[in-house]
Image (cartoon, rainbow, N blue to C red; front, side, top):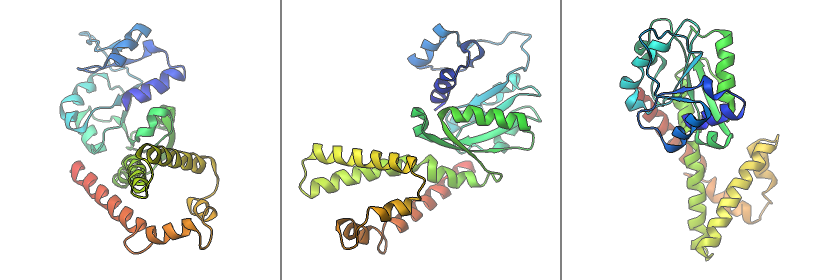
Amino acid sequence: MGQAMLDGWLARGLKPKQVSIIDPQPAKSIKALTKRGVKLNAKPGPKAKADAGAIIVAVKPQMAPEAVPPLGLYVGKSTLVLSIMAGRTIKFIENALPPGAAVVRAMPNTPAAIGRGITVAVANGKVSARQRKLATDLLAATGKVEWVKDEALIDAVTALSGSGPAYVFLLAEAMTKAGIAAGLPAALAGRLARETVSGSGELLHRSDLDAAILRQNVTSPGGTTAAALEVLMGPAGFDDILTKAIAAATNRSRQLAG
């Protein structure tokens, strides 16, 4: 996710020489960026000063206790600390860094890799209007950005949009299996499911209509779609299953956050 964001910033004109990456096990794609001027694992000198404009914390949450505190060396009065770590709270980040750090916690999702993500962010009380705009600009490189005031909502955000792509992929997977069960060749069923899910998503993206209206528009009374929806929308159907699934993911996010 961190590299997806960096790719977006570079594509928008960020100068590679302004970027410094800390990664103990960099991928080949990260190493390749050094040829463009990006600094990789540069060791701070004895007179290093806290002058970073923004620090992006894009590590796995279990690595946070080791990875975050050393970043304090680069945190100055005007530095924005933007975290996209799952589960790690603003309080955790504040405790790991020098007092008074301006922290934004954000939850992106995997479509960010193609510039079609959605990110929800929340800021602590130290974030200025200028830093909030900077965070918005940084996050917008990979898709749309929403802000919330209550950090507690991030757990539900994680469950809905953070984990949401997996639900969509599962839908395509289930549609493929159902098509095969109905007699279609496996390869054809897979292509039909993939293109139907991706095409419908693009239609929803481009349309100003609510999803419910789009669903109604494709459903003829007494037709084939209505027959299928009667099953999907019946007792213990799609709505109930997703409600339970997102509740389970929300609870798990809270557990991981401690």
